[in-house]
Amino acid sequence: GENVEQHPSTLSVQEGDSAVIKCTYSDSASNYFPWYKQELGKRPQLIIDIRSNVGEKKDQRIAVTLNKTAKHFSLHITETQPEDSAVYFCAASTGGTASKLTFGTGTRLQVTL
Amino acid sequence: DGGITQSPKYLFRKEGQNVTLSCEQNLNHDAMYWYRQDPGQGLRLIYYSQIVNDFQKGDIAEGYSVSREKKESFPLTVTSAQKNPTAFYLCASSVQRAAYEQYFGPGTRLTVT
Image (cartoon, rainbow over all chains, first blue to last red; front, side, top):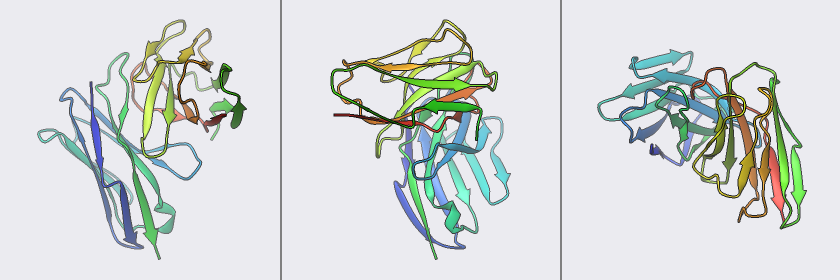
């Protein structure tokens, strides 16, 4: 089955700096890669996703890049703000009926003033 | 918020008792999912269902059971056979019968003593 590895497990940046979180996946058939943000005690929220026919996707300060050949994808957050502090999860799926998401183990991002 | 509800928010049970967690959605989504979240381990899939009266085992189904009698509802029963039931349980749904754009409920924190 699919295996998703996520690094780093913790990341501390100063406000205004950029943060990068990286994930690798094992199943070359995976074609959907979402990122979730989870604040303490809250539900995970989908913040951005990318499909395998696209190499990069941006939404304001957030971007995701995908390298299908290397089987890795990354989340980039620019101009970080204290409210970006949370745990971020990557995931991968092959899509299609009866498919499922496989999640990484999460990255705790701390944005310091 | 809204759309996917889970109840109760906190649940306490004695060891050896079965307990059922509720998950309801009014989004008219076809697919529903149950995840377990433990500290440092990300989200692990317990069961999922694409259509009414059909469901599949996820990665950690042992000790759990589900039913999908209505499109809106996907209750999870944690049985006494589950060795370590204390965890944060999250329900999710997606509009398609595929693992795209999953949206999560607020979660139920189960404590078994």
